[in-house]
Image (cartoon, rainbow, N blue to C red; front, side, top):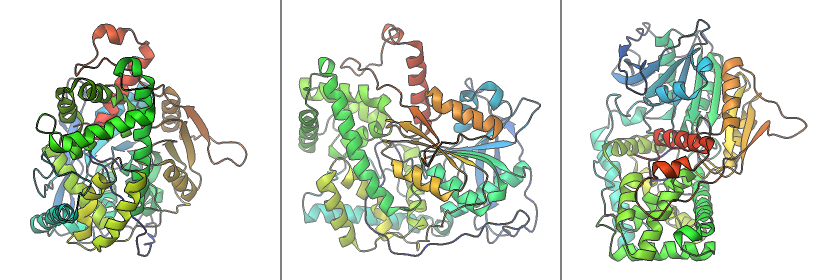
Length: 542
């Protein structure tokens, strides 16, 4: 799952419901198709960074069970292959749900070794409802405009107001998109992937998916195992917890990752002067949060916005130095400006974020059952908050529309798969957004898959982000189809060391200067640039 900057996913408990078993479709079966899909008409949409980028659109059925009915439009991008040896299309997805993927094609093509990238048409796409695809959902523009009430309910009245706000959002979606919401879900999106495959004229696809994109890819592989050529899944959604239980796991994991950040700040006391005891640093952070309740920083950053600002640090530690600088400036110098600027950089919602959140709720609320009794949410979230207070209630309100969603929920499919070719799974041990157990769980469900672990890594989205060891495994797989195999009875097939923790920066809102950058080793600078670029595309920074 790759939600927005500063707005995470939610908490919860056991979800009642059965499991839907998807039967794999034979190559000559699948959806009814009274007429073949048209081939894509690519046009030039080059940028300075990606001089060969092309764009196209594809009309697909809103309801794949009614292929002659209403159509919607998907927006696609492509970096075409240049080598004589052509390995087919490589579809790439940054996660979400609700993440725009058009920007991924150029980045992935530029980040892979040139010889490997040259053998693929790298295809990016905005999933149904997202970005340049039509219709693009926006249920309630400005839903996250500051300053919102404190995410932690201070009493019954505050809780009722927050519940009403979530219910209002769900009702707005239902009124605006009543005819569309029943078809904004992962299985429908997976069937879109197969429509893209058909339009590309490819018998099979290659696929690289991050975060929620791992779930989307897994569902596609379950539906169409013989249409998968190669599939790499990075930072894996736990298929056993979709979606309510997975979000409980996130709450605990993000709290742990926030503590890792506080420990890093304590180690950098010479720069940030917030103390050498991680517990004391964390206490200072919560005091800052309390102070913002009465006086929001810059008139924009209250407690909820503070959480929105610091959540991206749980996805990617490359943001830690600037977040720490803003934290220190506020605590030590009573200067709210860096905190306001950090919010505007990392946490503030814009129109794209409104669209992403509308699709996020539409997919997650439709995909699987959520409790419809608010008393369940209340109990679960207070129980979790008592142990993991960093983002639990922020997370709960982000998902709370699912308690009132106007469309009935589906049940998640069984992703057990013994027919798909070897899948390459990447997972960091300390990933907060998709905890480690998810990678292991999917590895067990997909027979013949290979699990590559970043030991000690806490970032979410780890390939093509500066770790050469991980990237070598990905490149070798895309080049040859071979996966690493562990020895003995271990479930882990290969291990890569995590990248070093970031270096501190001065307590200022300004970016590091050229001399500061020059003081770092070239490899560290390259990794930093790759990490920032990747995590921007994955949706952690708007």
